[in-house]
Amino acid sequence: MTVLIIAEHNNNTLNPATLHAVAAAQKLGAVHVLVAGNAAAAVVEQAKQVAGVEKVLLSESAQFENALPEEVAPLVVSLAGAYSHIAATATAFGKNLLPRIAALLDASQVSDVTEIIDAQTFTHPIYAGNAFETIKTAETKLVLTIRATAFDAAAATGGNAAVETVAATSAQNLSRFVGRELTKSDRPELTQAKIIVSGGRAMGSAEKFNELLTPLADKLGAAIGASRAAVDAGYAPNDYQVGQTGKVVAPSLYVAVGISGAIQHLAGVNSSKTIVVINSDPEAPFFKSADYGVVGDAFQIIPELTQKIKALKG
Image (cartoon, rainbow, N blue to C red; front, side, top):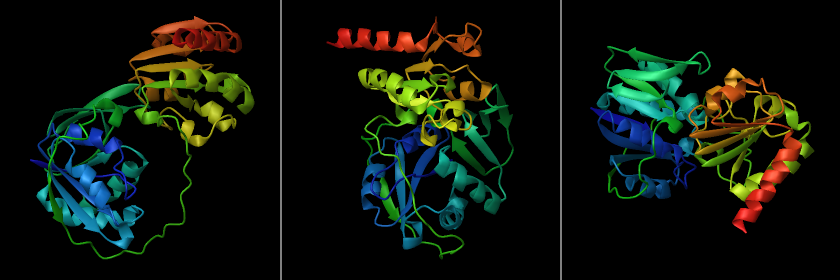
């Protein structure tokens, strides 16, 4: 069996999330990676070095520059005959593209795969992450989105894959790229961060959110996250949102400050290795999922904790 992984990239850099999809795909068979882009030679060089990749397919055309699913999907469908599985990471990119491919192929899609048991048996979350379902299908061609946090990343170096150029499909011209607004930050990206400090609506305001959490995150070298309630209240931008409707994370340490622990938030953090909850409400549901819990006023605890960490680090 051979699996086709659709690379997520910006024509210059391969998104690290793709490395998790490659690692997962190795459980199914040989791995090929498709780079559809425009002037994407740098991405090809990175993709061919990923450990476990046997071949990189390159298709370059102006219509692929911004990875519009209406343009990329026909290309993938044209290549699908040689593959048993077509997959991408369950990021916004993958969730936008893969259902269109599945529909065009008239094939089933298994979304947000967290475990691969064999070529036709997979586990994925249901009911907002409150349960996991194992399904077995008899179909010979499957479309998969892979939850990155459920699989280790393949090594970015060590491979030496062959590169093959494939012809671009005709432009569909069903949509056009208007623009992209990206938040620039020196902090780690949430889905790749080893440590995350998240705040909830109990922060009270955007000013208090930043005043309290930023110094702690700085001392820990952490990314900053937020609950949906905090984002909806305007305390933090949308790309900080962690949970079922935000980003699914799996850091080594997750510090939740003033977050009650709604089901949807827990679904996004339950793969974290260690969870620390700080909340003034001893009945907060999040404590049931915590490895360590502190009941108290976050506005007193967090500054003291920040000072202790500062003293330890010197």
